[in-house]
Length: 261
Length: 242
Image (cartoon, rainbow over all chains, first blue to last red):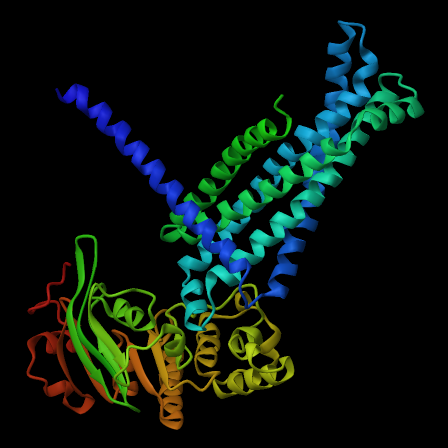
């Protein structure tokens, strides 16, 4: 009977482990949110994180959006040509960028850059007893380390998505007007005519959610890291993987909530 | 002043503390000795609330009190100094003071404490990564005394330092403890530190206090464990392979 029960036991252990991890993350998130609302507030740490997470992520988000917008224009043109519908390139590029590709690819790039950096920094602080030192100096690590990062990422990400959307549309415009023979004025008119307020706003809301996820995963895995270099490495990897998967899962749920018929 | 009563702590199957009973009187310097992995650091962390004992009590002035009230009276020098990489030296030293003082006042106090531990004002604006191990320990010491705490803990203050720098740190700790009148607990297995810093010594072995007494009785303790430890003998009641 062992051959029957062993796989079931392994499956049960996996499910229990997953549920326990979900519970720990949920409690961590609830604690972080409750600390956001209660003083003391570390304004300087928040501004530093705004620069680190927001300003310094602009190049990677901008470049990603630029190339994605350009490639999207080429793909839609090639696909549209099968139905003699090449003129939809500007509108589909714009809608695709602001609704999906801007927030999702921006979120994934920020996850790679920021979740890894947050997890590695906090895990190193834990390994070198800096977090214990914070406690002995009457400072709550959750308030001093986690809150500024979560707040900064949640507020900076929509701005990054907005900038990424604009650059992505510009990438499509550059390819459309230089490679696909679109009239520049007609391209811009088609872009603006078909874009609605909610297309843009939904992408920005997604950006805020993804920013929260990125910082939460970075902080959680950093705070709960194991010992030594191996612990720091494992925390960094777990932060990036979990943030990326959660961004994609949250993106589906948000899209379902915003646009399902 | 600080009293441990039957303190137990286990990590899974590893029973680190198995009933620690110890009293540290006000204004005295207690040094806890013991081999690696005997729970010296865990003992300190239990007082600070960084580790919660499974059983037993730890009181300061007879009260278990809230952790925040406790911590405002403590200073601690960590084994690796535990300086904040992202802050310059003076902000590390003045970390607690920056909440209650103006920036200028906090910096002035930080410079004074740095001077007290033998560091020049030019060090104040450097970052921890710019400093040698010995200088980091001194900055850690300056941070521990910055708010003039009543109680100071020193975790392996000379580990990783050359003998001369270790001597400097030992002398500094002894001077500071004497002039501040603070109650201190130092954990170490460096016998030079013990003889320089201690008023009283306690030996932790197998999760309990094996022996405790004044420093001048250390060499005549009559305890085979203590004798083996202070003379660094490979044979005796303490197993070399643990």
